[in-house]
Length: 253
Image (cartoon, rainbow, N blue to C red; front, side, top):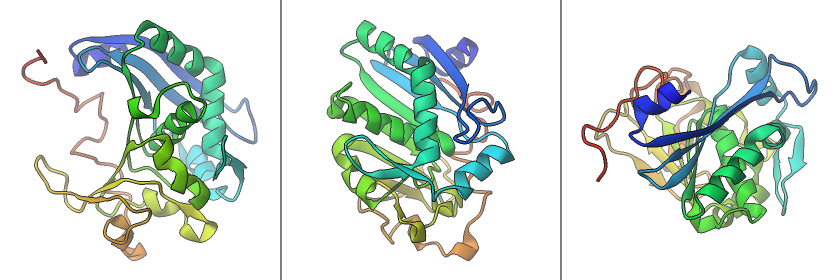
């Protein structure tokens, strides 16, 4: 893990990697796991939580087939039980301790929470959870996701901005995953959406939609055009951190 941090950052400190079973039906099922890494980016003065995406067809099926099973988020709001269960599984098995170790060591640093696909869902719900419980000032939390599926109903989506004011969901063109959990089940995306209706090459334009489920962004794409191909590549990277991550030419000063 430290090798990948050294590839991507000039001054990073590894805290902990968590990879635990998170099957809501079979708690010890090692075929369905949730994973995340906590590290410090000292140049950015940030505590970083980075969450892994979906691994395997069984995990994908549980995410996208059981969205009708929901739970209540602390403070109010209806959320997908699988994602909330994933958060709790990690939180109680190392993520909480890693977060507080980092926070107590670097009390002035911001918290950056990131992830793609299922990892984006975990990033969104984890950042909201930390804010809701008062573990971090909302103004010091930044959430960035890529290809994030819907994670909650309108009662959750509408209050998300108060919990995590600095939050951006990046969607690549006709990516199917952000739409796979349907509106008809009561789910709504939280803001703000950044939609790249292109190949996401360096310098490509994007559209920002602050409203929930704005038809000016990816909701404008008809269902027959949704594709998994656009889910697999964001900013030209298919396995960021393994093959495509490079440092800036010059380190920050």
